[in-house]
Length: 615
Image (cartoon, rainbow, N blue to C red; front, top):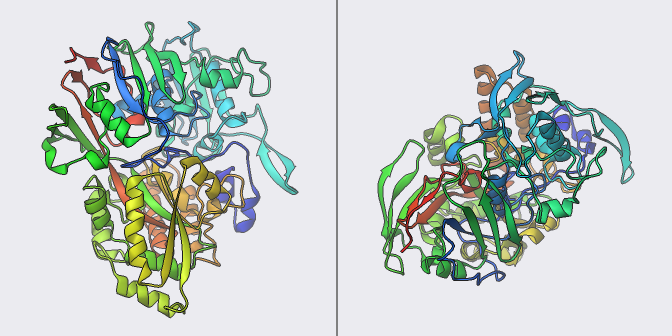
């Protein structure tokens, strides 16, 4: 869906604009986008026992991960795939150690025009893993694939988020005339072998941050024949599963989707060469199996499932300028004391409502019943922060202090409080009662902590005339049902594509939430007939779109609109924020490692990791 175009249009007729290739992100981050089903305690009956004798693998950095779906940067929407892709592919920009401030990666230098619409990049001297030189034409080809390939899940990154210039044609789709991208018209030009020019339709304040996403990484021109003008050397299926060719510090070795993936150090990397021979990713979905794998010292770095986590064993020795709390954790079950880092992720986990199916009084009653503090303290064992705004604290207008002040003083449904009396009143005022109850289905992805949270909420809502039926679904099934408008209430999360509020609040722009569209960005169906603040929310997001320049004046206008959109969500309860995740990592003493900052592990390169002697 070409969202930038219909954001500039007026009224519901704009929803007719649709474009193939747009998708939500899966974790299990689907967002980046990341729509995510990860979080504190994602569980699955699949996966489990990956070989346990990896102690002789030498200088392999050994990591646990979940199921991956693809090695193609334009196709990936889940965090697990993104972590591996991040090691094999280098885009123009990068978040060093996942800090929310970009610097050049493949870009040696860049210039921006006075009107903020033309970006010109000078490329570093680099080669692909097949030995070919990386050129500006390879980038132009990669951008075209991202925009025009049927395999792309991120076309809107180019056409909407960045708003790269392009032409459209009118096609009849499902009986409706729609404007779709005309292949070959994208405003991305190879000026010469080392100069790339990107032309935007209008300014976009987060352009450089957006270009740090791995979807914008180059691939050898013509290698995959999934766009017009290229026959391809390999099929997209081969490229995405067994023969990806990138330009990053590691090159592809092997991948078995249910067992493991491996990448090897690329000897001719243009940047800092890897300190390890490669990275081994063990695919283990089950929490207990993950825990046993780490306790057997088969992983160098790991997370601890909530069931095995004891907050009393955390000892924080310092907090750095990125907000990372560093220290130790222990003892572990195996007798070791692990190194520890915890940092608030730039993301939010929430309960969403299909507003066309769940009446506003019911949504408000759920908000009154929910005590975010209780969930974080009792269910998540303090592994996070209560969420009252959809935008995370570190990027909230006015900063964390303004976030906290609004939450404590303005949140209408009770700060650190479960207001069942108010919940009962709003239901009774709407005509509900003991003899006029309402049944709602809550669909959660397969997660122990969300299951426990749902159970608490179900018990509370019983006293306010709401019968909550809780069902679990595999993550991808939940997303498919959401896109089809088949959910009533659901659990999901969003992790930053780029560190700005509009990346999050796009999920609350009413025209983009219509599940009759091919690829709605969220599944809430926020319309004036089911939300008094729908028009207010749409106008706020239009204000964001109309003030896109990286200037103080436009930033001030966006900040005002961000808060207005958060307030509209409070009024209509389209999405109920629950928690902001605390990313906690644990590693053994033989590891020399800088833990990721707020952009999370999926944005971190592993070429700087060093390993000493294992015990």
